[in-house]
Amino acid sequence: MARAGETGRRRGTAADAMVPITMSTEELLAQILRLPRSERARVTSELLSSLEEPEDVVAQAWATELERRSREVADGSVQVVDWEEAKQDLLTELKARRAARRSS
Image (cartoon, rainbow, N blue to C red; front, side, top):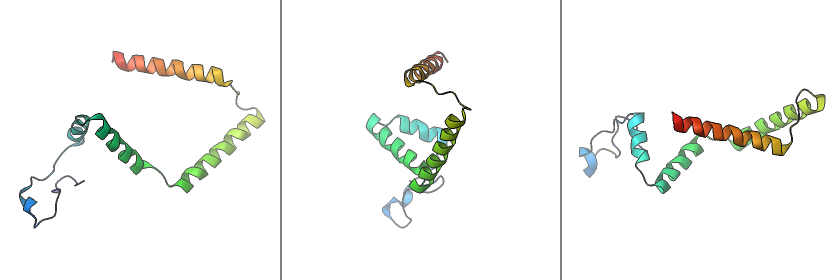
């Protein structure tokens, strides 16, 4: 994809007359939202992939997090919650967020 101010093609081609791309983020988002669902999913996948950390960085971060959580459970500094209770709390929170989003 060409950056703002660039044409989508190299100079010297039949596309030299192309208008430079000077699209704001809002305009780009509006264009993307007009795409069919499958194309929006493709754009989303590509964007998310561009934000991913290398696997070794993610693995190290998870190892550190698991060690921290294990220590907290072992030393009693956190309260362990039953999965069914945690799941219900999450579903209740999600429902509240969706309702708030619809009403705004």
